[in-house]
Every structure is written in structure tokens, then in C-alpha cells.
Image (cartoon, rainbow, N blue to C red):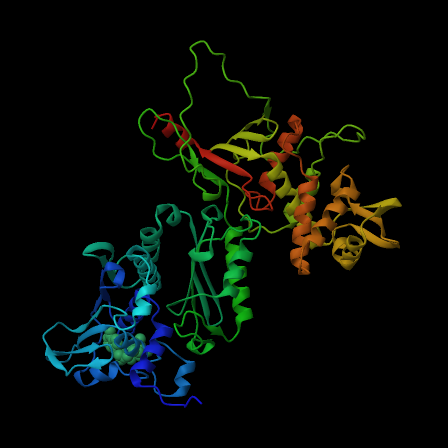
Length: 623
Ligand code: ADP
Ligand code: MG
């Protein structure tokens, strides 16, 4: 029969250390947090061999008194809170009193410190939990802590460490988070005696973002600043073109602390809905400040997750702030050419989703007497300014696959006038009175001369987005034009699909698709959205039902409408490969300037790319 016994102190510390100290970066995080809590304005960090050999953190904070030095290494010893109530209004990064005890238990630590007022400082050495006597130390005010040979007495842990560069990359990330969270601080990071970052006190948040993530990110950020009662949300969100394959670049800080939060991360993604392709993530640097009693930080050993008193209100604040900010921007993707070597011409898209990472090979030189390249189908002179648009030719063809109808421009115009005025009109169209040239290429793209540069439009993506916004607005206003069928159309579907369609009968009715159960797996379609024109309502209904069946969980009403709308918009829009008449081209382009959010299609693909005049001039060495 195994007997119960009290564990020796050394084992207890190692167990505790296991929770907090996973790798060198965890040590760096704890030491940096202590330096911040000490009120430092400057912190210098030296790392050797990814932190496995040495981690040294020197700060100019308040220091520790000689009598407190040994206490600093005992567990549950802290200067940051005194009563249990304090746990619910934590204003410091640390409060558990466990970090130094844990680090001291699994490494060889020298702690030297001097409070500003003290005549001289003192030092103590902690060797795997064993403390040396305290000695005098002759240093400047502040604290200097050296952690050597991490996990020297826990060989298994040491074996789990990865390569020097991997361990250092974690430290780099820890440093980045702290530098962003405390943009008022001077910070330096050195690895193996080489300076990795030197962040002066004067570097603003934006400067720091530029330093850590590059100019591409820094130059494509939009500032947000929103106050809701006691809560302040501020920071920067990136143009959707700067998206990433993971959510790692969604930085979130609560009261100066970096945290992970699924719900708030979801709110950010939700705000970018229809601007990003599936599986892509927005980039954001967001700071929430609130009274400490509104957030419980005592839920996770490394304090990287928190609990909010009113998570729902925060979710909505985040969603609406980010969404409204994005609506104010013109998000037309801009084409940027990289620096080219002499004699070589290359272009690539700045947006990662679209980037041609390797520069295009230079085009072979044309034979001397080659005929001029010609891909121009037609040139259209657009009406000036907001002059009435030419009517679209009526289409009643039944046999041949007819070019689809564009929504009547007057309806769109009316909708626009009634709709939100906050959306920025895309600036890429010329001012009234300036004529504008457009051509259709490959029956798929429209190329347009604008004052800003050459705009290339994907006709399907743009029309899809215009229809999507149009549907959405009409539904919101409660008057989506529906076309009743004089004779209801019976539609046969597999039983599962019939059942699923009937389940969502109300949502479908909102979309103008009125259905009824006819029994025996047959549905009766009574009406369809007028905007579908001569697209088959049955085909649209079938596509919509297919989509419903593909969902494993019942979607929320809002998601459902959103999905179905984008599906219907896709169905009704002109296709790539459709040759457009000059009237259709001008109508489409005119609608671009009338509708909101036309820079991305509902699936998040850009609808247009801008190759700026300046970029053209630069590429042809005119400037
Ligand atoms: P906590 O930060 O949770 O209080 P720690 O184990 O990290 O626990 O630190 C214990 C105590 O040591 C802190 O409460 C603080 O008083 C003191 N301390 C640690 N590092 C520093 C520092 N760099 N400057 C001043 N005091 C420090
Ligand atoms: Mg601490």
C-alpha cells in the first residue's frame, strides 16, 4: 500500500515552475513584467544562445531593499497585493509572487538591486532554489537580474528545448508584445552580443509596428479610437490586403497586458467578414483600457487569458468599432511594383493573397517588325459626372445564354441616397466633368483611366459585390422586389434538402424565395427576387439549398442571410467570359461609385486593382 507523504520543498518549486516557466521566453516575459511593474523607463535585455545560457535584464525601476531580496525568491511573496480583494482590482502585470521563486528553482540566478534612495545596493545568488547570503553591491539604482543555465537541474525539461533560433524567436515575440504594450519605454534586445532591437522612448506605437513588422504593414493601417463608458478601445487595424494565414498578428492588450481572447478575436474577424477569403486573418493592434475591476486576470498561470465581467458588451464594441472604421476606407487594392534592377521589369501585388512573390520574368523582346499588341475590345466614353445613365437594353431572350441584367441604375441610385452616407465614395473615379475611358479585356476585366492611375476591375467580382450590397440594403429597408410566379413552380429535391429548405423557410422568404411544402419531397416556389432577371429561379433555389445542407451546424439568421445573399449575388452577376455592351460597361462602372464596399467581392476577393500613375511613371523611368 503506497503511503502519503509531504513533498520536499525543492520538488514543490519544480512542479510550480513547470506551470509558469516553459521555456526561456517565459523567463524573459516574467522579468520584463517585473521591470515594468517597478516603474522602469528603460530596460536592457541580453540573451545568449536563445536564452539557454544567459538571460540578463537590467532596469532603472524602483529597486528592491536589501532585507527583501531573499523574500523575492520565496513563493507567494509579492509586494503587489495584500488582500484577496486586491485580486479583483489588479493594476500590475504580476501579482502571484511566483515568478522569481519558480525561476530560482530551475536556474542559477543572480539578483542585484538598489532602490534610488539607498546608498548602495545588495545582491543575492540563487542556485536551483538554494540562496546565498546577501552581499553589498555597487551598482546604479534599479535592478539587474541574470538567469544562467535554465533547467540545469531538470534535465528532461532541458531536453525539450528547441534550437537556439526557435527559442530566440519566442523571446523576440515576447519582446515585441511588451514593446507594443508599453510604447512609453526605452527597450533594447541583444542576442549573442548583437543588437536585435533598439527601441527608443520616443518611438511611437506606429514606429514600433513599423520596426517589428515592416513598412508594408505600418503604411496600411487605420487608426481606431472609441470610448464606450469606462472602456477605451484604441489602436490600429490593417487594410484587408495585409491579411495573414494565422491570427498571430491580431495583437490584443488589456490594460497594458498582452492577452489571447477567442471571443474578441472572433469579433475582429467578423468585422472583416466579406473582406477576407476564408482561412485568412486580419492584422490588428488593439488596446482595451478599462477599470481593473472589470477584468479578472487571475484565471491562467501565465496570465495570458482573462475573464471579462461583460464579455458581450466588449464583443459588440470591438465588432462595431472595427467594422465602422473599415467602412470609412476606400479599400481598392493597390498594385505596387517592387524595386527593379536595371533593365528588368517586374510587377507584383502588395497584397499577400495576390502576391506574385517571385517577380515576373521579363517579357521577351518583341521581334522588330512584330504587329502592335492589341487586346482592346472597345473604348467607351462614360457619361460625365452623375449624368443619367444610359438605359440597359431589355433582355428577354429565352434560348441563347443571355448576358445577365444589371440592376436598374435608378433603383441603385435611390438606394444609395437612402443608404448610409458614412461610406467613403471610391476616390478612384474622376470628378464630375472629367471624361473617363474604359475598355473590356478578355471579356473579364475592365480597364479604366482614373486621375489616380490605371484601375483594373474584375467584372464578375465587382458586379457580385454591387448586387450583394443592393440586396442587403433592400432587405434592410424591407423592400426587396419580388416577382410572384403566376403558376407556382414545383421543385423536386431529395428529402433531406426539402426538409432543410423548409426549416429555413422564413429566411428564404426574406430573400424573396417563397416556398411551400407540396408533400412527397416536392416544394412549391411561389416567388423569387426580381433582381435575378432571367436567371432560373429553380437553379438559384437549388444552389441555396445545397449550401444549407453543406452546413453542419444551423447558422445564425445573420450568417445565413449573408451567405445566401452572396450566393444569389454570385448567381445573378455577369460572369467572367461575358462580353458586355458599352452601356453595360458604363453602367457597371457608374454603379461602382454609387455602392458601398465595392472594393472586395462578398467572398473577400478584391474587385479592382489600382496601378497608380506614379507607379507607371516610375516603371518607365519618367520620374
Ligand atoms: P510578482 O511579480 O507576482 O509579485 P515575482 O516573483 O515576479 O512576483 O517578484 C516578487 C517580488 O519581487 C515582486 O513583488 C517585487 O516586489 C520584487 N521584484 C521582482 N523584480 C523586480 C524588479 N525588477 N524591480 C523591483 N522589484 C522587483
Ligand atoms: Mg512578477
